[in-house]
Amino acid sequence: MKEAEPVYVKTTADGRLVEVIGGWVCLAGAQEANHLVPLIEHPNRQAIARAVPGATHMAGRVPLRHDEAAIALGALSAAQREFDASPAGITQRIRLATWAKAQAEGVE
Image (cartoon, rainbow, N blue to C red; front, side, top):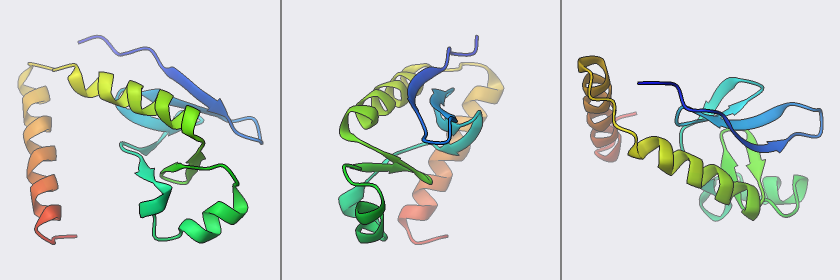
């Protein structure tokens, strides 16, 4: 399976690129998060809202406005739809599903 092209989300104040690459939100090319957390559900939402007015979602340490979150969510959804049918790809999907189930049952 070919590697997907990076999807530009934004540039941080210090000049680092935030992109979605292969199903991950990346900050300066380093994986940051594979999903977004709406700010209203974030445990540190009040401090984030004070520090970054207009933020609606968090991708790891990266705050995103509504328009940026929409770009990131679209790219993450597109990456999830791509299915790697190789044995390694199937193993990875099973591993992720098993871990998600364990987390839902309270394992950390």
